[in-house]
Length: 65
Image (cartoon, rainbow, N blue to C red):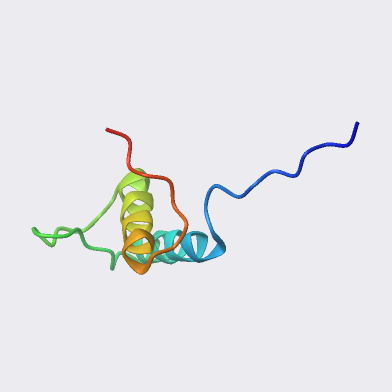
């Protein structure tokens, strides 16, 4: 039997947004929403990137509740 092709969970556009957010975090220019505080956490940077991707309509799974 042939292997089934895996579907992408995240689109390429979403990956670009996340990598952009990670680069901004590294350079120290990534800031969080309302408070505008500098983001230091890697997890938070990923969350911001995915949030931006969702706003753009990229293929990203729904938020876990």
